[in-house]
Length: 288
Figure 1 (cartoon, rainbow, N blue to C red):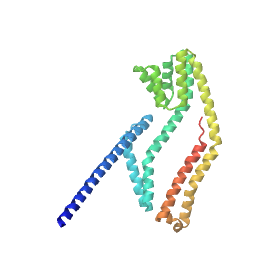
Figure 2 (figure 1 turned 180 degrees about the vertical axis):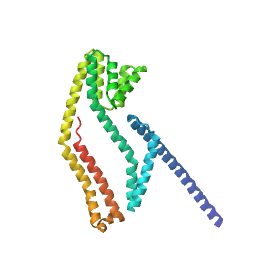
Figure 3 (figure 1 turned 90 degrees about the vertical axis):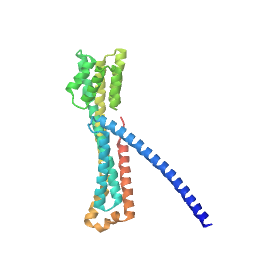
Figure 4 (figure 1 turned 45 degrees about the horizontal axis):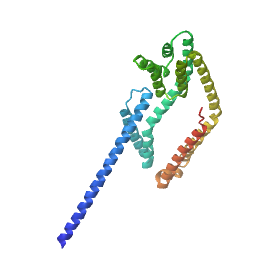
């Protein structure tokens, strides 16, 4: 009887172990699949971001930079504050910092491209009035204007020189640079080639329209400057008050960093600060 009980226990244990092995194996397989898909998507997005900036860094290098900064920020804040929660928040910030910087650089590059597009339209319009061809006018822009518009127009001219049709090369240009002004200019160029309209006059009118648009954007930015400044002040006010309280009476604010409820309050405060900043930014964003 004892032998039968032992055999039954071994059978149950073996079945449970086999089931756990199967479930664990399936879970690990799904987790590995998730990591593989995430890594592929991340490298694809990172490569696109770096290509937009014409950066020499590879997507894999950016991934290692994210991991390194996350580890450094995690250990640094953990050692300084003694709180693992603060370390985790710092690690998350370090992981997203490189992408945030690169996205900011891409936004600034696009903004600079749009401003340069006004002058480029005027240069091309003047060249066409002087008797140059469209490609010669584009080449004149690459010779006389700085980056980033020079780089994008050079890629366009190189594609066309290698046999890509003009219309297709223009579509590639708009795909690389997500600019509404550029799309408007390319549409006007394509329509003028189909209808035989005066492209020089069209480019001059487009340049005038874009100049007026940027003038209005500048006026709107001046009118909303007070709102942006208020958002920055309100966002920095809790940090400023926290530093003052810590200098005056450290024991009064130390529970925020030494107790579980304090960690929870800090986490909720950080989330609310981020949401408030995003809300203010959304309210002040005016789409033209």
